[in-house]
Amino acid sequence: MNVYNLQSNAKINIGLNIVGVLENGYHLLDMTMIPIDLCDKLTIKIEDKIGDLKIKTNKKDIPVDSSNILYKIYKKFYEKAKLDSLEIEIFLEKIIPHQAGLGGGSSNGAVFLNFLNNYHQNILSFQELVDLGKSVGADVPFFILNKPARVQGIGEELKEIKNNLKVSLVLIKPPFGVSTIEAYKEIKNIKNPQKSNIDQIIIGLEENNLALVEKNIENNLEEALLQSDKNLIEFRKRLLEVEDLKFFMSGSGSAYYAFLIKDIEEKVSNLRHRFNDCEIFLCNFK
Image 1 (spheres, rainbow, N blue to C red):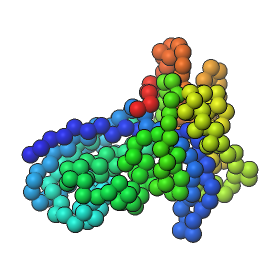
Image 2 (image 1 turned 90 degrees about the vertical axis):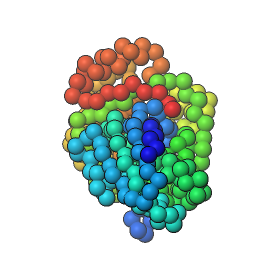
Image 3 (image 1 turned 60 degrees about the horizontal axis):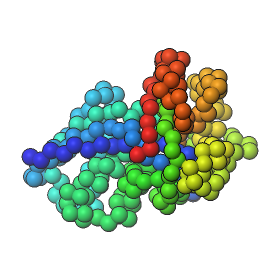
Image 4 (image 1 turned 45 degrees about the vertical axis):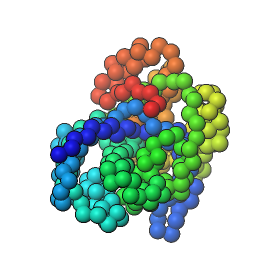
Protein backbone atom coordinates (compact mmCIF):
# COMPACT_ATOMS: atom_id res chain seq x y z
CA MET A 1 0.00 0.00 0.00
CA ASN A 2 1.17 3.49 -0.87
CA VAL A 3 -0.01 6.57 1.06
CA TYR A 4 -0.11 10.10 -0.36
CA ASN A 5 -0.98 13.38 1.38
CA LEU A 6 -2.34 16.08 -0.90
CA GLN A 7 -3.68 19.60 -0.44
CA SER A 8 -6.69 20.85 -2.34
CA ASN A 9 -6.93 24.65 -2.42
CA ALA A 10 -9.86 27.03 -2.84
CA LYS A 11 -10.27 29.91 -5.30
CA ILE A 12 -11.91 33.29 -5.48
CA ASN A 13 -13.55 34.98 -8.45
CA ILE A 14 -12.45 38.53 -9.12
CA GLY A 15 -15.25 39.62 -11.43
CA LEU A 16 -17.92 37.37 -12.94
CA ASN A 17 -19.97 38.17 -16.03
CA ILE A 18 -22.70 36.06 -17.59
CA VAL A 19 -22.42 36.67 -21.31
CA GLY A 20 -24.89 34.22 -22.86
CA VAL A 21 -26.88 31.00 -22.61
CA LEU A 22 -26.44 27.82 -24.66
CA GLU A 23 -29.38 25.83 -26.04
CA ASN A 24 -28.87 23.21 -23.30
CA GLY A 25 -29.35 25.89 -20.64
CA TYR A 26 -25.71 26.25 -19.61
CA HIS A 27 -24.61 29.84 -19.09
CA LEU A 28 -21.55 31.29 -20.78
CA LEU A 29 -19.20 33.09 -18.42
CA ASP A 30 -16.30 35.53 -18.47
CA MET A 31 -14.39 35.86 -15.20
CA THR A 32 -11.06 35.62 -13.45
CA MET A 33 -10.27 32.88 -10.97
CA ILE A 34 -7.32 33.02 -8.58
CA PRO A 35 -6.12 30.13 -6.37
CA ILE A 36 -5.87 30.88 -2.65
CA ASP A 37 -4.10 29.01 0.13
CA LEU A 38 -7.18 27.87 2.09
CA CYS A 39 -6.99 24.09 1.63
CA ASP A 40 -8.74 20.81 2.22
CA LYS A 41 -6.53 17.77 2.85
CA LEU A 42 -6.72 14.44 1.05
CA THR A 43 -5.03 11.32 2.39
CA ILE A 44 -4.97 8.71 -0.38
CA LYS A 45 -4.19 5.04 0.25
CA ILE A 46 -3.76 3.08 -2.97
CA GLU A 47 -3.27 -0.64 -3.54
CA ASP A 48 -1.87 -2.03 -6.78
CA LYS A 49 -4.78 -4.39 -7.18
CA ILE A 50 -8.18 -4.17 -8.84
CA GLY A 51 -10.84 -2.75 -6.54
CA ASP A 52 -13.13 0.19 -5.84
CA LEU A 53 -12.99 3.62 -4.18
CA LYS A 54 -13.87 4.12 -0.52
CA ILE A 55 -14.38 7.68 0.75
CA LYS A 56 -14.25 8.85 4.37
CA THR A 57 -14.56 12.44 5.59
CA ASN A 58 -14.64 14.55 8.75
CA LYS A 59 -17.99 16.16 7.82
CA LYS A 60 -21.21 14.23 8.40
CA ASP A 61 -23.19 16.15 5.77
CA ILE A 62 -20.85 15.25 2.89
CA PRO A 63 -21.95 12.15 0.95
CA VAL A 64 -19.42 9.34 0.61
CA ASP A 65 -21.30 7.35 -2.05
CA SER A 66 -21.37 7.60 -5.85
CA SER A 67 -22.76 11.15 -5.66
CA ASN A 68 -19.44 12.45 -4.29
CA ILE A 69 -17.35 14.26 -6.90
CA LEU A 70 -14.33 12.11 -5.98
CA TYR A 71 -16.24 8.97 -6.95
CA LYS A 72 -17.43 10.53 -10.22
CA ILE A 73 -13.84 11.47 -11.10
CA TYR A 74 -12.61 7.99 -10.16
CA LYS A 75 -15.13 6.24 -12.42
CA LYS A 76 -14.67 8.58 -15.38
CA PHE A 77 -10.87 8.48 -15.20
CA TYR A 78 -10.65 4.70 -15.36
CA GLU A 79 -13.27 4.57 -18.13
CA LYS A 80 -11.41 7.18 -20.18
CA ALA A 81 -7.98 5.63 -19.52
CA LYS A 82 -9.34 2.15 -20.31
CA LEU A 83 -7.66 0.72 -17.20
CA ASP A 84 -8.88 -1.56 -14.45
CA SER A 85 -9.72 0.58 -11.43
CA LEU A 86 -7.41 0.21 -8.44
CA GLU A 87 -8.43 -0.19 -4.81
CA ILE A 88 -8.24 3.26 -3.25
CA GLU A 89 -9.29 4.77 0.07
CA ILE A 90 -9.51 8.54 0.53
CA PHE A 91 -9.88 10.45 3.77
CA LEU A 92 -11.11 13.94 2.92
CA GLU A 93 -10.55 16.54 5.65
CA LYS A 94 -12.86 19.41 4.72
CA ILE A 95 -11.75 22.89 5.77
CA ILE A 96 -13.04 24.93 2.81
CA PRO A 97 -16.70 25.80 3.50
CA HIS A 98 -19.16 24.34 1.00
CA GLN A 99 -21.99 26.25 -0.67
CA ALA A 100 -19.59 29.17 -0.49
CA GLY A 101 -18.47 29.88 -4.09
CA LEU A 102 -14.90 28.87 -3.20
CA GLY A 103 -14.76 25.75 -5.38
CA GLY A 104 -13.88 23.26 -2.63
CA GLY A 105 -15.59 20.25 -4.18
CA SER A 106 -14.31 21.00 -7.67
CA SER A 107 -10.80 21.41 -6.27
CA ASN A 108 -11.05 18.03 -4.52
CA GLY A 109 -12.09 16.43 -7.81
CA ALA A 110 -9.37 18.10 -9.87
CA VAL A 111 -6.58 17.29 -7.40
CA PHE A 112 -7.69 13.64 -7.36
CA LEU A 113 -7.89 13.56 -11.16
CA ASN A 114 -4.38 15.00 -11.53
CA PHE A 115 -3.15 12.50 -8.93
CA LEU A 116 -4.68 9.51 -10.76
CA ASN A 117 -3.25 10.66 -14.06
CA ASN A 118 0.20 11.17 -12.58
CA TYR A 119 0.05 7.78 -10.82
CA HIS A 120 -0.68 6.15 -14.18
CA GLN A 121 2.24 7.84 -15.98
CA ASN A 122 0.21 10.78 -17.35
CA ILE A 123 -1.87 8.56 -19.60
CA LEU A 124 -4.26 11.46 -20.39
CA SER A 125 -3.24 14.79 -21.93
CA PHE A 126 -4.04 18.13 -20.29
CA GLN A 127 -6.89 18.70 -22.74
CA GLU A 128 -8.31 15.24 -22.05
CA LEU A 129 -8.23 16.03 -18.33
CA VAL A 130 -10.03 19.33 -18.94
CA ASP A 131 -12.70 17.64 -21.04
CA LEU A 132 -13.19 14.93 -18.42
CA GLY A 133 -13.31 17.50 -15.63
CA LYS A 134 -15.84 19.64 -17.48
CA SER A 135 -18.21 16.66 -17.63
CA VAL A 136 -18.18 16.48 -13.82
CA GLY A 137 -18.21 20.14 -12.76
CA ALA A 138 -17.81 23.58 -14.34
CA ASP A 139 -14.95 24.65 -12.02
CA VAL A 140 -12.95 21.42 -12.31
CA PRO A 141 -11.00 22.50 -15.45
CA PHE A 142 -9.72 25.61 -13.64
CA PHE A 143 -8.40 23.53 -10.74
CA ILE A 144 -6.66 21.15 -13.15
CA LEU A 145 -4.64 24.19 -14.26
CA ASN A 146 -4.74 25.77 -10.76
CA LYS A 147 -3.11 29.05 -11.78
CA PRO A 148 -4.54 32.57 -12.07
CA ALA A 149 -6.68 32.50 -15.19
CA ARG A 150 -9.33 34.18 -17.27
CA VAL A 151 -12.06 31.58 -17.49
CA GLN A 152 -14.66 31.61 -20.27
CA GLY A 153 -17.19 29.38 -21.98
CA ILE A 154 -18.89 27.21 -19.37
CA GLY A 155 -15.61 27.04 -17.45
CA GLU A 156 -13.45 25.06 -19.86
CA GLU A 157 -11.74 27.93 -21.75
CA LEU A 158 -8.67 28.83 -19.71
CA LYS A 159 -6.16 31.60 -20.36
CA GLU A 160 -3.40 31.93 -17.79
CA ILE A 161 -2.90 35.47 -16.43
CA LYS A 162 -0.43 37.11 -14.02
CA ASN A 163 -1.44 38.07 -10.50
CA ASN A 164 1.03 40.40 -8.80
CA LEU A 165 -1.35 41.88 -6.20
CA LYS A 166 0.51 42.36 -2.92
CA VAL A 167 -2.42 41.85 -0.55
CA SER A 168 -3.87 39.43 1.95
CA LEU A 169 -7.48 38.31 1.90
CA VAL A 170 -10.15 37.88 4.52
CA LEU A 171 -12.95 35.44 3.70
CA ILE A 172 -16.26 35.56 5.50
CA LYS A 173 -18.73 32.71 5.14
CA PRO A 174 -22.17 33.41 6.63
CA PRO A 175 -24.06 30.68 8.50
CA PHE A 176 -26.06 29.78 5.40
CA GLY A 177 -25.34 28.62 1.88
CA VAL A 178 -26.94 29.63 -1.39
CA SER A 179 -28.17 27.63 -4.34
CA THR A 180 -26.16 28.01 -7.54
CA ILE A 181 -29.21 26.73 -9.44
CA GLU A 182 -31.38 29.48 -7.93
CA ALA A 183 -28.76 32.10 -8.78
CA TYR A 184 -28.84 31.11 -12.45
CA LYS A 185 -32.65 31.01 -12.44
CA GLU A 186 -32.77 34.61 -11.19
CA ILE A 187 -30.42 35.92 -13.88
CA LYS A 188 -33.32 36.64 -16.22
CA ASN A 189 -34.78 39.03 -13.63
CA ILE A 190 -31.81 41.42 -13.72
CA LYS A 191 -32.92 44.35 -15.90
CA ASN A 192 -29.57 46.06 -16.38
CA PRO A 193 -26.79 43.71 -15.26
CA GLN A 194 -23.59 45.40 -14.14
CA LYS A 195 -20.56 44.12 -16.04
CA SER A 196 -17.06 43.61 -14.71
CA ASN A 197 -14.36 45.04 -16.92
CA ILE A 198 -12.32 41.84 -16.99
CA ASP A 199 -9.61 43.38 -19.19
CA GLN A 200 -9.04 46.15 -16.63
CA ILE A 201 -9.07 43.66 -13.74
CA ILE A 202 -6.36 41.64 -15.48
CA ILE A 203 -4.25 44.79 -15.96
CA GLY A 204 -4.75 45.69 -12.29
CA LEU A 205 -3.72 42.21 -11.16
CA GLU A 206 -0.59 42.30 -13.30
CA GLU A 207 0.38 45.84 -12.27
CA ASN A 208 -0.42 45.45 -8.54
CA ASN A 209 -3.06 48.19 -8.88
CA LEU A 210 -5.66 47.30 -6.26
CA ALA A 211 -7.78 50.40 -6.92
CA LEU A 212 -8.12 49.44 -10.59
CA VAL A 213 -9.08 45.88 -9.67
CA GLU A 214 -11.70 46.89 -7.09
CA LYS A 215 -13.20 49.56 -9.35
CA ASN A 216 -14.01 47.00 -12.04
CA ILE A 217 -15.40 44.07 -10.00
CA GLU A 218 -19.02 43.05 -10.49
CA ASN A 219 -20.67 39.65 -10.02
CA ASN A 220 -23.83 38.85 -11.98
CA LEU A 221 -24.60 35.85 -9.77
CA GLU A 222 -24.58 38.07 -6.70
CA GLU A 223 -26.88 40.50 -8.50
CA ALA A 224 -29.22 37.62 -9.28
CA LEU A 225 -29.30 36.33 -5.70
CA LEU A 226 -29.90 39.81 -4.31
CA GLN A 227 -33.19 39.78 -6.23
CA SER A 228 -34.74 37.14 -4.00
CA ASP A 229 -32.43 35.59 -1.35
CA LYS A 230 -33.47 37.26 1.91
CA ASN A 231 -30.57 35.79 3.87
CA LEU A 232 -28.06 37.21 1.42
CA ILE A 233 -29.81 40.59 1.22
CA GLU A 234 -29.58 40.99 5.01
CA PHE A 235 -25.99 39.73 5.14
CA ARG A 236 -24.94 42.17 2.39
CA LYS A 237 -26.36 45.01 4.48
CA ARG A 238 -24.22 43.89 7.42
CA LEU A 239 -21.10 43.88 5.24
CA LEU A 240 -21.83 47.38 3.93
CA GLU A 241 -21.72 48.64 7.52
CA VAL A 242 -18.02 47.71 7.75
CA GLU A 243 -16.57 51.10 6.93
CA ASP A 244 -12.94 50.32 6.11
CA LEU A 245 -13.36 47.25 3.87
CA LYS A 246 -14.93 46.54 0.49
CA PHE A 247 -16.46 43.07 0.22
CA PHE A 248 -16.98 41.09 -2.98
CA MET A 249 -18.83 37.80 -3.42
CA SER A 250 -16.88 34.84 -4.83
CA GLY A 251 -18.64 32.83 -7.53
CA SER A 252 -22.20 31.98 -6.58
CA GLY A 253 -21.53 32.67 -2.88
CA SER A 254 -22.35 32.75 -0.10
CA ALA A 255 -18.76 33.64 0.90
CA TYR A 256 -17.41 37.16 0.50
CA TYR A 257 -13.82 38.38 0.47
CA ALA A 258 -12.02 41.67 1.05
CA PHE A 259 -8.47 42.71 0.24
CA LEU A 260 -6.21 43.67 3.16
CA ILE A 261 -3.00 45.71 2.99
CA LYS A 262 -2.43 47.16 6.47
CA ASP A 263 -3.64 46.59 10.05
CA ILE A 264 -4.44 43.06 8.92
CA GLU A 265 -4.56 41.26 12.26
CA GLU A 266 -6.59 44.05 13.85
CA LYS A 267 -9.14 44.09 11.04
CA VAL A 268 -9.55 40.33 11.08
CA SER A 269 -9.92 40.33 14.86
CA ASN A 270 -12.60 43.02 14.64
CA LEU A 271 -14.47 41.02 12.00
CA ARG A 272 -14.35 37.87 14.12
CA HIS A 273 -15.89 39.82 16.99
CA ARG A 274 -18.48 41.55 14.85
CA PHE A 275 -19.45 38.49 12.77
CA ASN A 276 -19.19 35.82 15.46
CA ASP A 277 -21.88 33.76 13.70
CA CYS A 278 -19.69 33.38 10.60
CA GLU A 279 -16.61 31.42 9.54
CA ILE A 280 -13.72 33.83 8.93
CA PHE A 281 -10.40 32.95 7.30
CA LEU A 282 -7.26 35.02 6.75
CA CYS A 283 -5.73 33.86 3.44
CA ASN A 284 -3.20 34.68 0.78
CA PHE A 285 -3.00 33.99 -2.90
CA LYS A 286 -1.45 30.59 -3.58
